[in-house]
Each structure stands twice: as C-alpha cells, then as structure tokens.
Length: 447
Image (cartoon, rainbow, N blue to C red):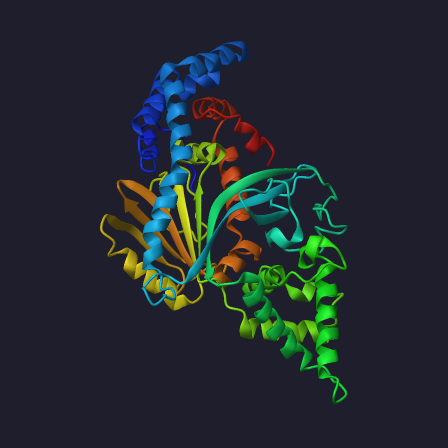
C-alpha cells in the first residue's frame, strides 16, 4: 500500500474514463484553487459550512454534476453497444443460414445489503428480469450466496448474520446470457430434464418389471425435494401443481455452473444428490457466454476521486506501486465463457476489431494472483473511452464471487476505505462529496 498527499496536479488523472472530462476537472480545479486543502483545514466550523455551501453553488460544480449524471446514464447504452460489437466474435453454434443458434436473455444483477448489521458483503446477489421489482428476492433468482439455505430459512430473504430482513438494494450490472436456443421450451427442456431423471432412476435398485413406476417415483421425489426450497418448479407455486420443467432445468443449469451447491440440500438423500449432480454435470451445458456490463455509480466515483487526488494506491499483489494513481475504469464489461481456450481466443479477436486498441493486457489465467484469482484483464480503448474488460470462465467467475480469498468487492473495498480514512481529512471528503453531488461520506463513516 502506498500513502500519498493531496496534489492539485493529480486532478488531471481524473480525465481518462470520461467522454467529456473537461467540465469535471475544471470543477475540481476551481474548488481546490479557491479553497486549497490547507485553507480548508484551518477554517472554523461555521466558516467551513459556508465554504461547502459556496462550493455547492458554483456554476462549474453544477455543470460537472450534470455531466457526471449524463455519463453514468449514457454509459449503459455505450456498454450495450460494445457488447453487441463483441458478440459476433464469440464462437457460437450457427444455423444453416449462418445466424447464431442462441437464445439471449437480458437480466439486471441486483445485490441485497443488510441494514441491520455492519457486515461488509452482500447477503445475496441475484439476476432479475426487467419486469421484476428489485426487492423480489427468491432462491431461484439468487446467483451468488455462500449460504443459500441460511438466507432463506422460512422462504423470505434473511441476513444469516443478524437475522434482519431490512435490506437496501443495489443494481450492479446488466447481464446478457446466451444459451442454446430451443424451438419449444416446455417440450425440449422437459425432455432434457426427463432424460436426466431417467439416468438418476437407473442408479436406484428396483424390482424387474417396475422400471416405469420407479421413474415416476424418482421424478416425484426430485420435484418434491426441489419444491422444498424452489416453489417455481410447480405450476402456480403449489405443491400439487404440474411440473415446470423449464424452471427445473434452469436450476440444473445453475447447479452445473456452481451457483447453487446441491450438497447444501441436505433434505435430498445423499445417493440422489450424488447421482443427480453427476448427471447434471454430464448432460447440462454451460451458457455459451455471459456478458456482464457495469458502470460505476457516484459512490464509487467519490472513492476513486479521493484515491487519485491523494495518489493512493492499493494493489493486492503489490505490483506497480511506482505508478501514479489514475481513474481509468468507469466502464466495465465481463465476458464469461465455458473454457480457458475460449478466453484466449476472444482476447486475440478483440485485438483485430477496427476501432479497438488494447491499452493494457494482464494474463492472470496463466499467472494467477496470490489469492488464486484468475482472469484475463484488458484496458480496451474504443472511441477514446477506456473500458475495463475481464474475460474468464464460469468456474473462475464463481470462485471470484464466492471464495473469501478472492472476493474483490469486499477485500478491495475494505482496504481502499481504510487507506482513504488513514490519509484523507474528513473536510476534503466533504468537499469532494459536494463536487460529485452525493452524500458519499457516509460510505466511509459506515465502515
């Protein structure tokens, strides 16, 4: 970790991620030229409050806030366009006419954070249709959770640390999931589910002549076992509802991807769990690709700005400590693919796309971090805007989100906040918070 001090010249390092950076840097120059950090530190409390009101009233600051709001809102569209450019470079199954034989579903990735305790990680992260309410958390939609059983003890989302059901919800990203396309979802996915259940039933001892009865019993048992936690596997979420095979297949897919750990489902017999897991891994394909786009919100802009202004640097592997802290990753896109070779092939193809320039490339697949984190990281310049691109397999993505040694959002955020609090005076935090246009200081005080 590298400590630093405020330097007005560092404001120039805020430029890279913004399409229209000039109004933003002008506002910071205006504020800290009229109110140097030393002056802010010696002001009395009443005078300092007047200074903050003066900063909030500056035309340069108001315009900068408008620009930041626009960059954040338009960033979603830019990332969607980038995803559409990358999509044709993926190696996907094709129809006879050459069109990709895939089905695209777009989700919002939402995290639930507990308001009842000071835990530093999200209780759960889920994928939501655009029509769903942000607080509509159910087990079927929970993508990442270390303790799926513990956070749904009675069916409703509950913090497994303090027992609170009071949450705040945060949108992390838009997620584009590319699966193999089927002509009739109920028929085709139903057939796949039945084939898996048929193979599971073949592992169960039976009396000759009763194989069909045994299959029916195994299917009933599996549906009952999954209904115990996932109500949507039955029509109308009722115990006697007809089987919803597409819903059950999606759960199989999430077990295959490792988002749900079937070993947690202790109410299912050990033999059935093992047999079902074996058949799911043998017969359920991973999504061809998952493209996850995210744009940093104002709270993150606030933290990044403080890191840049004080030239603070935190790197989990202690690399590049001599480099100046810069703000380059306002926009991010994550490509999640089935195999390692797919990751390297896509990285090679991105270098050949007209208008794309790879500014930086890190191979953390062949050379993992000490934490075990693995991925390809690229800084991709398109139209003068820098996009942080991560390319990884489904297994790498799952490990990065659930392995305590690898989890970026918790460890990195905690260390970054600690570093800021050790180096940045509260009054500078207040001034930067005013420029950004949010009550961001509470993020630091809460940690």
